[in-house]
Image (cartoon, rainbow, N blue to C red):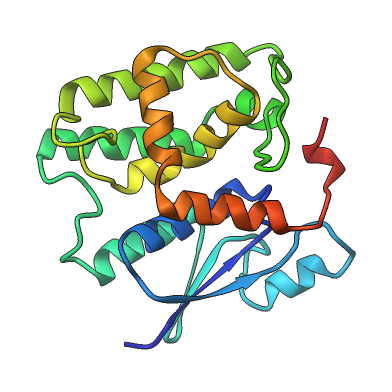
Length: 218
């Protein structure tokens, strides 16, 4: 099979890029990585458009196929490698996993805007603008429901690692950076995700980047 190539942005800031990258790492897929720093100069958009018709990252290249958008990439991978357990086996668990993944994909705008992902710096107490705590409460309630209903087989939302966990991985990094107060279930889940070797690899790479994007810094 032709080598997969994933085009991503800065690891320190690009939460959308982390999602498919983490999925591919966790499921042991070999892939090339092209990193295009975001907003570093006027030419960054044209560089991305060499690969992505939307002009955004991430984008997956495979044979003649181009797949952009993080959720579309994960679904494409699930179809391309059907023997891997991308979603929970149980139908009810799978339905919930898809619901919360889609909710994370399209929602929580207050959290996104006021607590941008930043792996290198800690901002305890920052970012709690209007609506942010409501987003945090909703996310932790999702984690609690998933863990209590379907998490008995392991330490992830549905026991074993799945696409849903990758979609909440940037939130884990946000909660860490902003020192968000969490309940015991959520704290345990954050520690589980952070302990993944792939997450540590991403964080280490983010710490070695030199680009500073002021819009993501306090």
